Picture 1 (tube, rainbow, N blue to C red):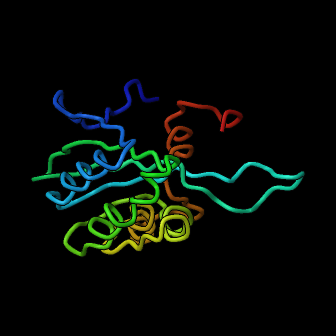
Picture 2: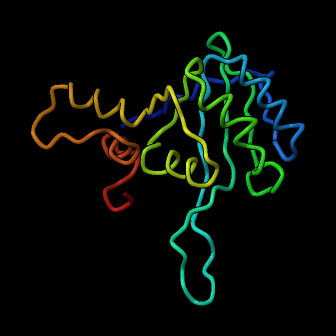
Length: 171
């Protein structure tokens, strides 16, 4: 049984979280991220609400979290509100093309192939270049490890079960 879980690497006391709710703040976000060699992102999206008694099978991006790294150190976290019309309509030109399409900036995401990438393309017209997907990296690492039969990749639930932090009925 694990008594103490490892803690995440601290961002530092001077780390800022900035909400992007207008075009000038979107421009400041772009200017900051253009100085970075790596940008981590996570797109939050969902399905549109039911209309006229049926459920549209369309997605809609709500906001994207962007975290830039300069010299191996996190700079600022930007939370870009994509439901604000001015922010949404300017996202592609101010962030999508200069940041996501740049081959000089490494973009890092998790499980992007099944969610973030198609939604970024469909909703915002953004194509991502030079991407490191942590889920895909995990698949490669796990495939190269020597596992006993029926070994499964370790995700959060299997990890919590392995160290008896939760029980089988809790999973």
